[in-house]
Image 1 (cartoon, rainbow, N blue to C red):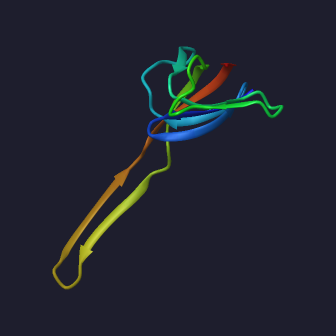
Image 2: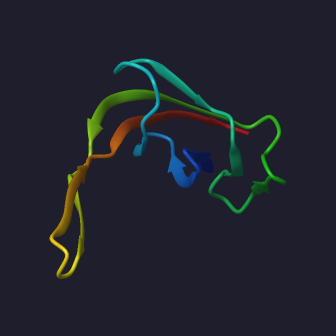
Image 3: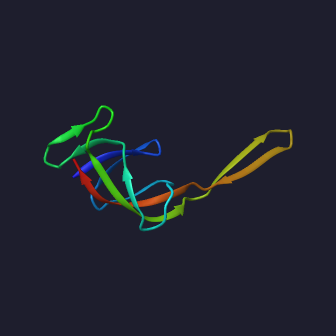
Length: 104
């Protein structure tokens, strides 16, 4: 079974057993997670249901594996000849989720 889910304003193609990094959601490792926005579900044999916008009755369940932070990016702004310089860093927070069950 495969499904396309939407979470954090992004779409992910997932299969049962996959570990997916999504934008941070609240919870601790081992906590169950359910996804409501399922855009497409396929059984892998050509039978697919595409939602408009979501598939009714479809269900994708998972569990949180861990919470982590991505690589640091540096944002540097400057204006030439004006002695204006600003440096800032950012690390995005992610949640790793293992997909346990996909149901049509």
